[in-house]
Structures are given as structure tokens and as C-alpha cells.
Length: 312
Image (cartoon, rainbow, N blue to C red; front, side):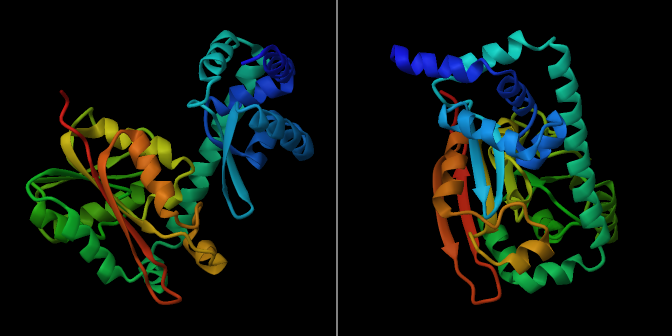
């Protein structure tokens, strides 16, 4: 970095509002509207400062249509500097208040998701079947699940795959953030006398699974509902044991706004390279992928498998 670039960077960091934005993003990936609420500043002002931080390489943005979610650029050349700034300002009163409001935003976001799925609980199976070939979905999952493993079904829902998984896995760990949905999964397991199931309440960003506890991780139509898929994949890698297998079936990128609204998607599916790159960045290797195309109005599938190498 030359002196001119350093001067420009320091000028960017000399503004208190921009420091507040960095501190807020150190807590969570946020949209513009969530930053506006957390920092209690106007939308034009927030967007202006975000544009400067983005140009300086201090933050990144994931866009999907008109939506955008901002994160700290922890992989950039300024990652160490950002970390120093966040640590050094941890006791600042205004920034502490900002972080508290960010926590409230995260809680509100979570409650909105829980309410969305609770409201549609009875109608959800038919809703999903309007946009996905669920028979093919189940086949794609089961064909790639290895036998005789402890398998974590992350975002397990009410137990879409329990019957099939129970036949292949030695033990199933189902994780979901909704107590009501987990109750349905437990009822299903009890009704079918499935004795190799363990259901855990938790968030995908902070899995209730020990380090290297599982031999297979499954994401089935889940990642398009999380704000930061990279964080979730990183957590999956942590929970995966040596030589564990990752199986991902997600919607292929689409532009169907009706599907997005009815399904409540955050991301309108993923491009193949977008998701495989994230899986590789999480640490998984031997990534293999393909697109299973469907006829309108059904959405196409991305099918990705990967593994966690044996430590040397």
C-alpha cells in the first residue's frame, strides 16, 4: 500500500459514523434497513457511508435482487486493522448501545422467521410442493447420504426426511430453531418408532453440536433462508469429524418473485460457483456439484457433495 492509499484509508476511518457501522457489522451481517434502525441514522446517510466502506474494501455485500446484506471483510488485506479497531473501541458507550440495538434487530429477525413458518405450518407441505419436486428432492438427498454415520440434518423441519435417514444413519441429530417444528419432528419419530433420533433446538450459526461430533452434514433447502450462508457452512465444518461428508441440496438461482414471496426466501437460490466457493472456503474438499433442472414453475436443484479431509 502506498502513502496515497494509506491516507485515503485513514480518512475513511476517521469518521465516527463509519466506525459505528464497522462495530455493528462485527456483531452480525445486516441489511441497510437493519443498520438504519440499529444506528438510528437516515437511510441515505447509511448508504453513503456503506458505499465508502465498500470501495475501501472494509466491508462486503451480498446482493439478491433489490436486497443487500453487508458484512465485515474478514478476508481482505485490512482484516487485522478492522479487528484492532473493533477490539480497541469495545468499551465505547455509543458503540455498546449500537451493539445492543443490533442484538434487538437479530432477535426481531428471528421472531419474524419463526412467526412466518408458524403461520404457514399446516399449509407448508403444499406450499413447498408447488415449487419443488419433493419426491426427487428426497431421492437426491438419500442417494448421497453415506450409510452408518452420525448424520446431522440441519434445519430439519418437521421431519421431512426422518424415515429415509433413519434407515441409513446410525444416529440422526435434527437441529431447528423452532420449538414448535421440533415438537412435530419428535411426534413423527415417536409415531414411526424411530429410536435413533436426537432433536436439538438451536441456530445454524451456533450449532448445538460438539466439535467433530458428526460424520455427515445435511443441508436440504435450508441455506437460502439464512442471511450469512458462509457462517453456517463454517459451523458445519467445525461440527464435522474427519472424513465427514457434506450433502447440500438447494434451489438453483431463479428470478421467480412469486416463489420468493410464498416461500419466504432470503436468497432466490444460488449460482453453482457461488455455493461451491463458499463450501471450499469453509474448509471442505473434493467438492462435486451438478444442476438438476426442472420445468416451470418448479424450481431447479443444486446438488453438492464435499468432504472433510483426514487431519495429517
